[in-house]
Image 1 (cartoon, helix red, strand yellow):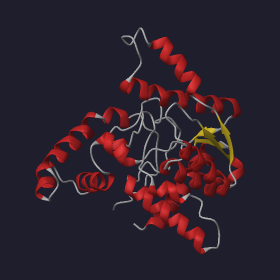
Image 2 (tube, rainbow, N blue to C red; image 1 turned 120 degrees about the horizontal axis):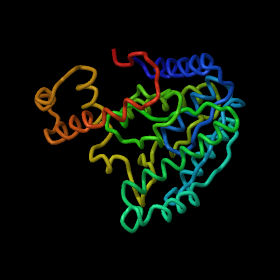
Image 3 (cartoon, rainbow, N blue to C red; image 1 turned 135 degrees about the vertical axis):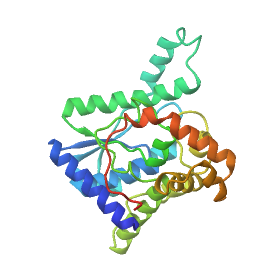
Image 4 (tube, helix red, strand yellow; image 1 turned 30 degrees about the vertical axis):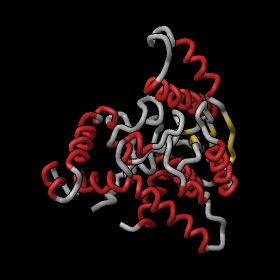
Length: 272
C-alpha cells in the first residue's frame, strides 16, 4: 500500500471513531517527535485545527529543540497549544517514592513515572473540557513493548497504531511533499525527520540505542515475522542476525500483555 493511501485510511479511521463516540474536540501531547507530529497533522486533517488541542509537557530531560519543533509544528498547523511542565509533579513523585524504592527513584521506574505524569496531565484536560485523548504510539514500539503502561499507552484511539516506525516516516514525508506541491508550508519541521528518535526520559537517550536495534532492521524483521509468518529459523535463513531474531521474538512474546491494553487503531491491513 502506498504512503498516501495509508495516510488517508488513518485519517478516515480517526474521524469515524471520533464521530461515532460523540466527541467534538480532541487533545494530543506534542513532544516534538515524529509520532506526535504526524498524529497532530492527521488530527487537524480529520477534524480541523479548531477542534484539536496540543499540549507540550516538558520534563527534566526535554531538549530545547524538541520544544521548538513542537511549537513550529503547531504554528504550521494553526494549532492551539498550552504548556504544562511535568518537572514539579515528577520531583514530587521522586520525593514521595524515594524511601519505598530503596533510597531513590531511578532507572526504568524514573522514566516510566515521567510518562505517567504526562498521562495524568492529558487526562485532567480531557476530563475538564470533554476532549478525547488521542494516542500517538506506532506498531514497532507496541510490538517491542517500548511504551509505558498507563503512560504513553493511554488514549481512546491510535491513528498510527498499525504503522511501523519506518512507515510513519514515509507517510509523514508524503504529507509534507503534498503540502509543498500545493504551495503550502510543509507541516512537519524538517528537523523532526533528521534527529534521532528519543523519548527524552533520561540524559542523551535515543530509542534505537535503548532497544538495541535500528528501526529499519527492526521493521524488516517484524514485517517478515508478523506479516509473512516467518519463524525464528526462517528469519535467520533469510539473513537476519540470529541474536537479533531471538531477542526481538522473545520481546514480542513477553510484551503481549502490554498490547492487550493498547487503544484501538485503524483496522485496515496496511501490509496485505
